[in-house]
Structures are given as C-alpha cells and as structure tokens.
Length: 179
Image 1 (tube, rainbow, N blue to C red):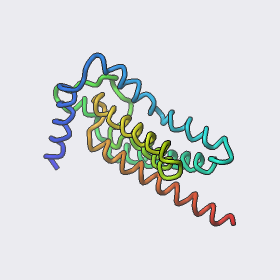
Image 2: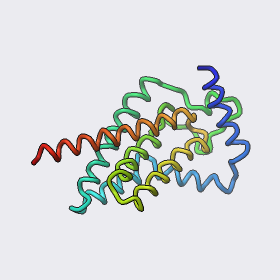
Image 3: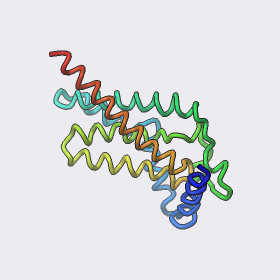
C-alpha cells in the first residue's frame, strides 16, 4: 500500500514540476470549473431531457449523476476521509486553493464519467466520444491542479462508469416494465 501512496505523490510532483505553467493554469482551472457540481453535465442532461427524442437519455444521465453524487460525495468521501494531497505531499501546491471536502474519490471525475458514459452508450459516437474526452480532461485537470491523487481520479472513473451503467439498467427496466 505504501508504494501506491508514494507513486501517487511522485506523479503529482512530476506534474507540478514538469507540466504546470502560468499559461496553462487558468485554462486548466477553467476546464475543472466545468465539472464544479457537475455543472456541464447537469446542463447537458437537462438539455437532452427537454426534447422528446432524447428525453430518456437526459433522464438516464440525471439519474447517473445522482447515483454518482450519492456514492462518491455523500458516502465514500466521508467514509474514507482522505486528506487532500496538497496537505500531505511535501512541496505540492494546489493551483486553485483549499478545497472544502475530502479527496477520495474525485467527485468531478465521478460525475463526469457517469454522464459521459450514458452519452457514449446512448448517443451517436460523434457526441459520445467527445463527452468521454471531456470527462477524461476534467479528471486529469484535478491532478494538474494538485487537488486529487491519481487513485482518487482512477476510482472516480470506475465509480462514474458504474453509476452510468446502473442508471442505464434502471432506465431500461423502467422502460420494459412500462410496456
């Protein structure tokens, strides 16, 4: 377990020392802001839910976001209570300052992959693939900014995809039960 913690810290320090630049900082901060409270994903799912042709996809995306919120932000963050990396890793500085909650798992990444996975599975690939790319960029932004460990983001990906799968299964059952 110790080697994973060391690897987490080494990756964050590597990113800070070799990738971070004053030019990229506001760009990456803006990118991560898209994931604040799942904002971009809430807007996208509500837009899809507005139109009858994509309503089920939008509602499934909203359900995925809700599941991700409950699993990641309500249950796991408080259960695991992992301290943010900039408070533990010597020399690591957060670009966006102190965060108000715990580190594990990454809620930004979880919500991003929850909605993006639904979009990828249910929409044409010309929309689904960019959604997954945006989700990945939001997850990576959390590492660049120094506010999450790589394992926080990795679990956010896994839990987000799981949330999207569970939401899709529920939506499919509701659809088949309404016939």
